[in-house]
Amino acid sequence: MTDAPRRTALDAVHRALGATMTDFAGWDMPLRYASERDEHVAVRTRAGLFDLSHMGEITVTGPQAADLLDHALVGNIGSVKPGRARYTMICQEDGGILDDLIVYRLGETEYMVVANASNAQTVLDALTARAGGFDAAIRDDRDAYALLAVQGPESPGILKSVTDADLDGLKYYAGLPGTVAGVDALIARTGYTGEDGFELFVRPDDAPALWAALLAAGEGVGLVPCGLSCRDTLRLEAGMPLYGHELTTATTPFDAGLGRVVKFEKTSNGGAFVGRAALEAAAARAEERPPRKLVGLIAEGRRVPRAGYTVVDAAGTVIGEVTSGAPSPTLGRPVAMAYVDAAHAAPGTEGVKVDIRGSHEPYEVVALPFYKREK
Amino acid sequence: MDNPQHLRYSKEHEWLSDAEGGVSTVGITEHAANALGDVVYVDLPKVGDTITAGETCGELESTKSVSDLYAPVDGEITEVNEGVTDDPSLVNTAPFEGGWLFKVKVTAVPDDLLSADEYTAFTAG
Image (cartoon, rainbow over all chains, first blue to last red; front, side):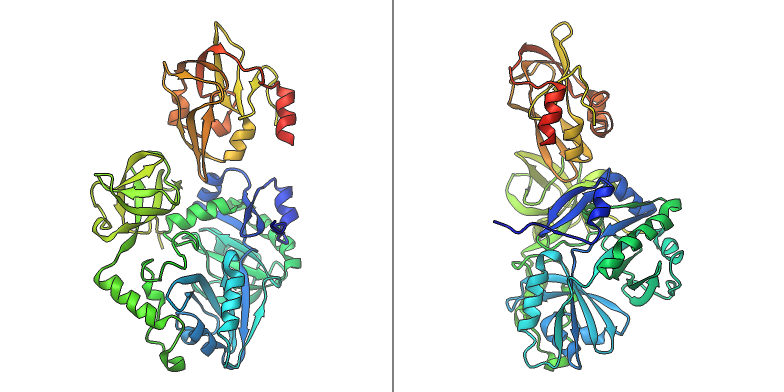
């Protein structure tokens, strides 16, 4: 027996909009409002509004908050300046990924860790277990925030029309407190779509009014409400990994091609951090004899690869596995991310196919991402 | 949504038109199209194929999933909708009209097909 799914502060709003809802990591979330392809295109060309309140916020405060995070995470959190954010990961002692995270430094001794909904409890437990000996406090703030995201090329203009905050001075992966449509918010220039955009952390009680204000502000430039379905195709085109697909406890950051998030050079705690020894070995292995590499695959046909489908060579031998796949609205073809044996992982490798329910369909191997916005 | 009164429906969410000269048109319902989301690929039986009621005869792929297409009757395929092969979004935009899937010369009709009202009640549950 499972618990009834949790509902966000915007639940009634979604239902009034006629959203198709889905259970995601124990939350009842909007999958799409109308056509997920139209929502995808809106974010690429105009703007989209998302409810991401399922994401898990954990606040870490205290004189040794940075030292604790440097010990518990693989990134160099102490080097993050106040008002900036960092993409990072939390790993097991054996180097396996527990979750990928964004850490915002809110103040001199205050950080907010944003975890995936499915892993928020795991991350909270791991941080708590790793906090011994540090003068820092960990607070479960999952219920303290609703999270709205405005993503797409029109998002700066939309947000500017409802806030006096200095958005031009707000760089990518930065955050600042401000007022948006009369609501107190942490305004972050982050996202998971491959577009410029903002994420707004607000009190749950304020979320419905902010949602309405943003929809109204964006109406004239084509902002539409967007569900998790298009969020998945947007992040896939942008080559961004998703926990449970590209990232798992059986994968190290180096296996996922994301070794750059691991900072062996950090000096806090004498350079020690959870997973260090295993990750050094993983880094060496990835350099010398990588087992499999994460690649992009573009279909020559129209059948869609799905997570778990096998990748085969011309002789039908299994050489990899699809971790995410979907029809790409931008490319007009199905695309996938897959772990493929290093010998077949170079872009342009001939004869790479995906077994789609028994039929071996030809695919082109490409470097990720599939899509990169023009700056 | 309105399920047209002149059609009959399977519990697998296909619709079937009344036979004209023994040939019926088959598609999937608006309810099914909405549940699938944007359809991006359809795999249909070929002209001349024999289909059997309740058995799979093709598949429909959407952004998030792939679903089998079930034959609502026994019969032989006489025509497939090339328009929907070229533009699968017709299944979403006009499921009861331009998004039809195939025509079949019917040899047997199962006795558990639903009327429009029965299908509406079936999908409301």
